[in-house]
Amino acid sequence: MAEEKKEAPELECSHCGTTSELTPVLKYVYQGEEKTVCVRCLPMLIHG
Ligand SMILES: [Zn+2]
Image (cartoon, rainbow, N blue to C red; front, side, top):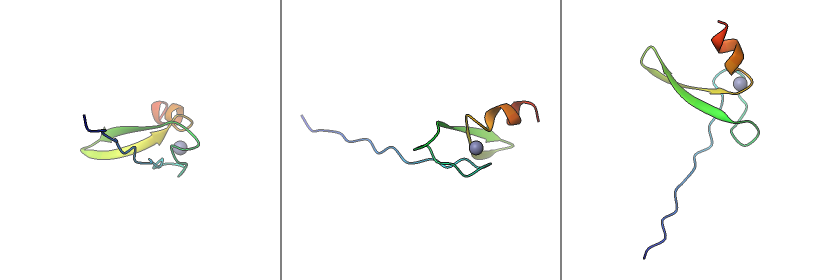
């Protein structure tokens, strides 16, 4: 059985630039563009 190592690419928040190493960062698609947002910027995103 071969060991499969999945790479976990580090994501960077499109809004504040923090990385998924410090804060959970989510990926989303807006107007066909793939973007990222950390949990700190998410509330701002929701409230516009
Ligand atoms: Zn952010």
